[in-house]
Structure formats: C-alpha cells, structure tokens
Amino acid sequence: MLSIIKGDEIMVINGAIVSDLDMMYLESVLQEELALCMMMRSSRTEPPDLAGMMRATDDIIESLVCPPPPSEPPVISEEMISGLIVPAPGWSKSNMCS
Image (cartoon, rainbow, N blue to C red):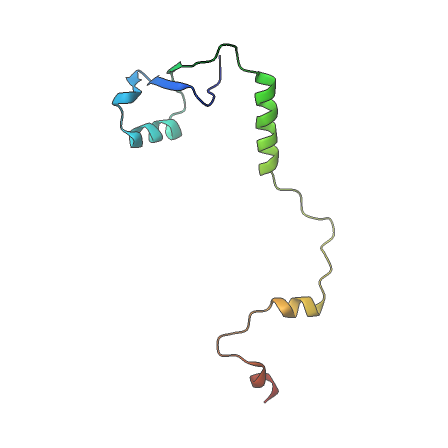
C-alpha cells in the first residue's frame, strides 16, 4: 500500500471518475468518508521512503502538541499586573485623583 504524495493524480474515488465530480462534492467525500477506494496515477519511479515520511509526520505532530504547563507559576509583580489592566472607556487618571 502506497501513500499519496505531492504530484500524484487521483483518477477515481469510490468508483466515480474525479474529472466528472463537483469540487464541493469531492471535498465532502474526502472529509467525511471513513473508507476510500482510489485509483491514482503517479510519476514515481521508486517506492516512497516510508521511514522519511514517518519522521516528517512525527515532526509535524510533535509541533502541534502543546507543552505541559510550568510546575510553578511565574511570579508577576503588582506593577506588571497594573500595566496589563485596560481602563474602562472614559476613565482617566484625573478621575482617580479627584
């Protein structure tokens, strides 16, 4: 079983000729079907490097995983917090001093 790579041409999906299908229908089939039967045309001369594809896939998945939260929360001073507070519309420092 081979994987699809850039440059492969999908000719038939689930018995339907792709060139006869509407693009919206194609997108829905590719997103929603649990099993696909495809006939493809490829210009490959050698089988794909499965180990290289798995490494690339693992790297992509690893980049999508969020790191765990820190064991101790960072210390934030009152001054830093006050700099992050957004004043209400119409508020000014003169209102605070009056």
